[in-house]
Image 1 (cartoon, rainbow, N blue to C red):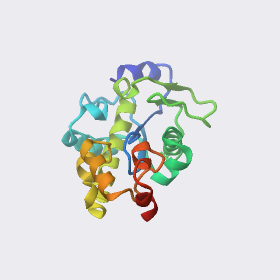
Image 2: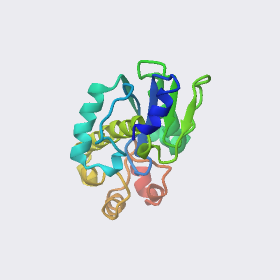
Image 3: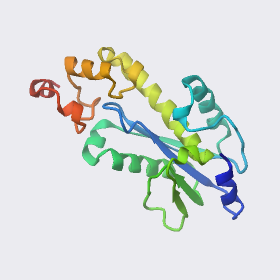
Image 4: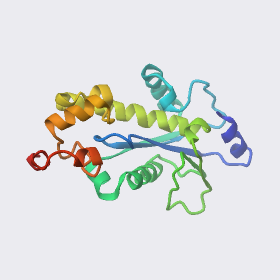
Length: 207
């Protein structure tokens, strides 16, 4: 996976920021975005698209990436803001904020197919399936995924009726049944999502 970055390092760039998100599809909880700048030529054959890794491997790599990264940042955009600006723009905003708060100005930006604004003068590539092509994007995907999963585990303790720890907010059959039974809670659920809107008027008004 390092091959993509090597070609950029060879052009003289040193701080390549990889950006990715976790949680665009779930009905509840935040979308979490991350930026990660790895040392030049750092190699770790275990780092890959977070969706291709087990939870145990992600947890181990999460700690490794935080330890070796030159700079990184993780930003969560909450459901109410997702409803206001839509999930695509929320993901874009989260990645842009992550870059701004990572601790250094990158000289090259790679994203997982997400054009970012406000970084004039910095070369940028938005790669389709970038988390499977560039190590820094894959590392960002792991930071975002593990952080979001831990947030959902905490929310599960607060709202045990939805069994969030199991499905992490994704629209599984079980989750949809529990949502229908208990209704959505403001601040937890994304009210702009159709399965949430499908709840009865009484349920939507209760909370």
